[in-house]
Image (cartoon, rainbow, N blue to C red):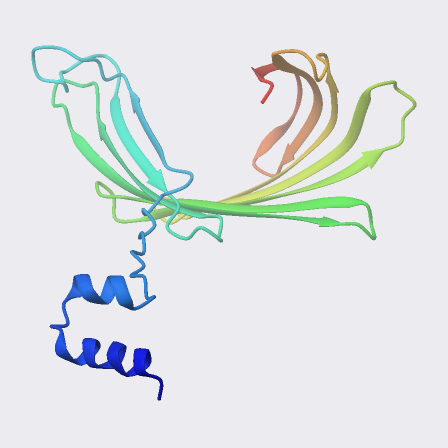
Length: 222
């Protein structure tokens, strides 16, 4: 063993081993792992008819007041749960609460050229011993129409609603012709879309209905 190597070894064993000495002589860095902050995506909070005042927030009025919230507990699944508190506008000011849930799924069938969606929602009311559950679907079939800058499609939307309180089961089918075009360009600060819908709905418990809707959406062009 060389003379300088032996001297270095004697120095190591003769000194006190402290955390500062280890950081200086041993090439081992302590990694401080930063724990990711929990985030709740698709979190919504809303209030209807509630205004700030120096008096009690919930006061007897002619309309109902409600506050609620819903969140998505699982990031990879489109499943949301929530709650809602409602106070009626009558003099009694009856307060009730609801527990809600909803889920939705959407898939593109490239082989058939259609888009299929399925959604379900329900709630349990504390004031009534029962629940309500609804299931709806949608199928978008694109049209090949020679309209510049327009995309058109046929949308079929069947639905079913089950009310355990009244024992009623309602079904329906809505067919719509949907057209959409973009009025703005990519260089604009705001994105504007124009939607046109012409629909015809049928249900066993109601008369057929026709509908027409014109919608303009404006949003920041991010």
